[in-house]
Image (cartoon, rainbow, N blue to C red; front, side, top):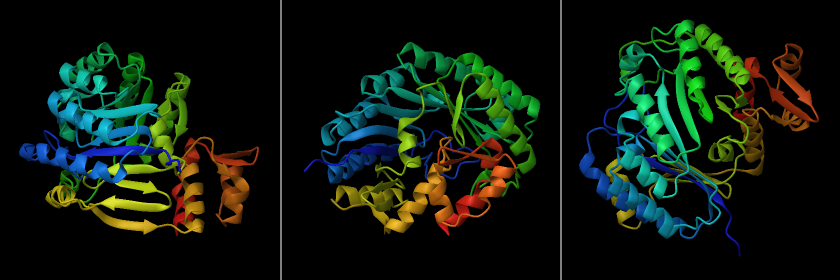
Length: 363
């Protein structure tokens, strides 16, 4: 029996410094844990031996915090435990300050063919407010290194609605990024999450300004030749993120590493968020799952609709109406969505209000 193809997410939870807005499971003070963690990843991969992998995304944390030797070890584990013959896209996240030539080359030689660099903003003042370790010049050097070692598919991550950021700042960031010629841009509104330094400091996001910045980014990037193909993502033709599309199309993705989540054969799993517990359980031959949920077919159908509404291509209009999703005609009458060829698709202004639809589908 042929095994089903899947995507693979690998979580590397180590950072040189935790950003002030970050609420991910990351650790900036445990370099001695990296080696046992890589051994634990290798052990967890054994539970998915020989699975054919279509896409890979190595995220974090900061995957470029690993040394070249550790990167080679990680990539060797993936090659030895999994079937990578169907692999079409393999992405790694990078922070500019740790994206050295030897690390980038180690990932490239290990089979990574797409890079996602966290810039956030071109303003050095705002980068310092975010707690980032790089400045814009440092980013430019990392971007050029990425191109020089052979990455011809590069995404730049941006954030908007930052403390003190004006529309003029955002316009400047978008202009400079477009001039660099990336293949893909991701743009996310700042969210102040509990447990972060921003939350403790009382930082608040200006929702109205963020909405204006979002619509400006959509128009600006579209005019520059990018397709606004998902709520927060823009791509040159043919450069959409194949791995992230698996999430939005509700296709199988295996999650490896502490706190990693995945979906496989109708079952959602999430690993423990406790680093030491993750390592100990994996090395003892135990699954590190903390949560496991089997979805009923009706739940899966509603998830499908919700996730497809994140995409420019939209969802089946008849299925949305059959599911009783409210306000569809209101969205259409106000120009927040379009309906054509049986598809209901949100436009950028509609995406700003999409939670009205999403909440019904996950209720």
